[in-house]
Length: 269
Image 1: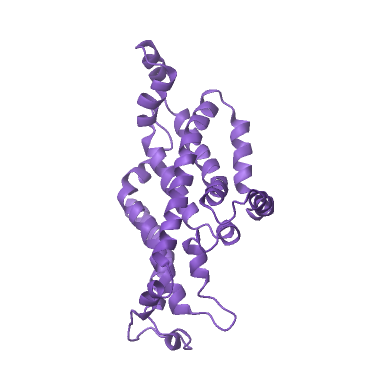
Image 2: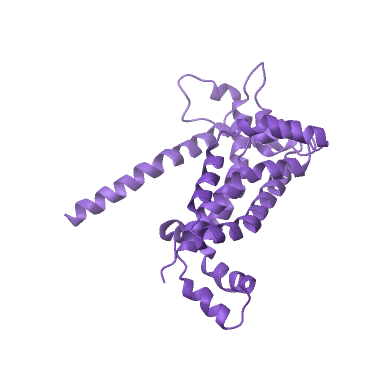
């Protein structure tokens, strides 16, 4: 019976992993094909690979600049979300203000296009279109509620006795929060940070409307491979492959903490 359960478990894991791996592999293979190979029917499985599409990604535009813009926007939006979200989630968890947490979750679930027109009108009036300020501010709609919602569960799992002991030992509430509670919930912080970074990195709609030549991010840059005449499937796939590398590298380095954070969700006292 145990062998059957074990086989069923690994079979389910295989099915869950094979689909995203197949999609990524197909995207990478598309980037190695010529336009003629990509348009062939039926699709070519065996072909002569070429790196021309990857070369054209960096040759035809300021792609490194776009990567830098995406990194700046994502890192700052995640950093500000942590700066504001950690104290907020701690307060919600400590005083059991679940309704506020629910409101934040609903705000996160509202379609982003609902925010787009008001944001554009405000930033255009302030002269902030095509600035990092406008992009970082709008991306906080993505990162801040997500950080708060994840971290509430972690702070609720921290025993109240830890903070009480720190206060008795002479710590101020701020010192107890920074020196005692933050290290305890570090797995949750890693999880929230990486997932928020990925969501911000992949955000397309806000960047399409609020960015310009100076602050264009990589999702918008990838969109340039689509024109009225044709879709450059090879260049599109090559650019999409390139922009998946930074989040992938980040996930690999912090996967140990992410797994702990996603599986525990709280700290046992």
